[in-house]
Amino acid sequence: MKILGLDPGTVATGFGIVVFEQGRLTLECCGVWRPPAKLPLAAKLEFLSAAAFALMGEMAPAAVSVETVFAAKNIASALKLAHARGALLAAAARADLPVFEYEPRLVKKAIVGYGQAEKEQVRAMVLSLLARQRSRIPLDAADALAVAICHLHAPRTPGIHGTG
Amino acid sequence: MKILGLDPGTVATGFGIVVFEQGRLTLECCGVWRPPAKLPLAAKLEFLSAAAFALMGEMAPAAVSVETVFAAKNIASALKLAHARGALLAAAARADLPVFEYEPRLVKKAIVGYGQAEKEQVRAMVLSLLARQRSRIPLDAADALAVAICHLHAPRTPGIHGTG
Image (cartoon, rainbow over all chains, first blue to last red; front, side):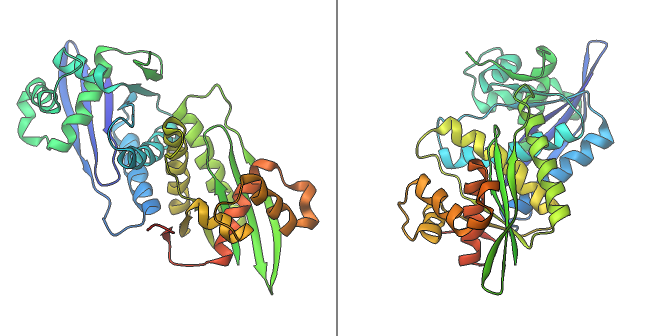
């Protein structure tokens, strides 16, 4: 099963595709999309949407996995993130791919085994799980790979998982 | 000048196109897009994105006008709204249209002359401004028409207007 994980943001959106076959997890590709900083918001969102749609067509993942958004810390940041998510989720639906959303604590639990884990622990574990290709993983893509791996641990029906 | 106003929402997105020519304001079309409630979020966003992209291609407005989002009241609602905005703004950029964003108080000021006006006052004034076609304006489209008319009052460079 091939899963695309996304870590949305208007400044940088991380992406990573992992494949789980015959009990083995491998990294297919990963990277970061960075819209030119001078673009207006709408053009940045379309930049991300077009990049994601092209990748989905090229790599044909079975599903898209993404973290839910919440506004616990910084509302302005959460609103920007939600714009990026909106453009990316629409692109996934346009590519006819099911979208699975996981709460951050579920992603942490799936990767580190502990829902309150630090961001650094999650990243270190992702690099460890995909050790052979470690040098090819930009830090910004590690979070996208984490949510992709999370989906492999807990495949369910499309929608939001972990609420309530 | 033909302007498309959008009032984004995942449950209902209002749209309205007005034309200002030779000192006269006319209503070109307006309505509401309602994604089927049973669809997952990504599919709702793509529903809105596709509808907006098709309308932009068909009606060829010169620009898209939309209210800025802020999280003053309900953060969960603001996040949903931001998702819809993200999908719609990306569609506008894909259609190669400039996007102008106006703070709610600027829209109120442009329509009613008073930045603290009530929602009902804005709607009543929009219906009055477009009186001849009043019967064709759904309430949900009135806010979209308001932000379109606001742009006619204050055309500027694409981006966010009214901050600071």
